[in-house]
Amino acid sequence: EGVRALQLELKRPIVRTSLADMVYENILESIVSGRLTSGSELNEVGLAEELQVSRTPVHEALRRLAADGLVELLATRRIRVARFEEAQLLEIYDMRKLLECAAVERAAEHASDENLAKLRADFKALTASRKAEDWAGRAIAFDVAFHLRIAELSGNRQLEAEIAKYKRLVQGFCRYT
Image 1 (cartoon, helix red, strand yellow):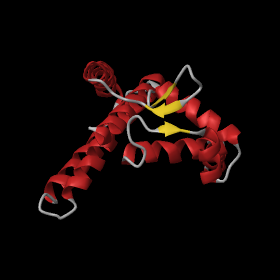
Image 2 (cartoon, rainbow, N blue to C red; image 1 turned 180 degrees about the vertical axis):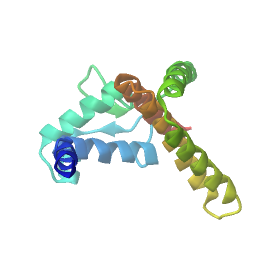
Image 3 (tube, rainbow, N blue to C red; image 1 turned 180 degrees about the horizontal axis):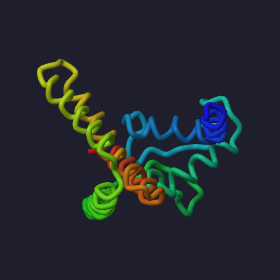
């Protein structure tokens, strides 16, 4: 029994982070934090030099960010941080509503009592700390974690990935607005 448990433990995949993934996360954080503002032009060569990497991982990261809707690849071969118009913002929130309602339905079917108890405990801990100086930051972190956890509990990896994508979009334009 003990050997079997160890074998199952060893079969878990090892998470590897590529250089392109690290560049993606770095640029994403710069957009979400507001250091790179809406409409800012991005230069692959300049980013590669700043991040001390070759152009290839920067190029890959920018393509992923474009697929996420956070940067725009312009016809002139220029790249800029996406600009969000009101109609786009409404569409993004509409997509989040559709995706997250579907995730809640699936999570309600799949979530264990233990998973639900953990969500409730996290919420109670947050509400108990309402008077703390860093409460607003905690509340935002809780909101992000809560929605991503519900997506995870849905049991649908594609749904979870799409919800994470739209969450990044919202973070990106929240800083902009």
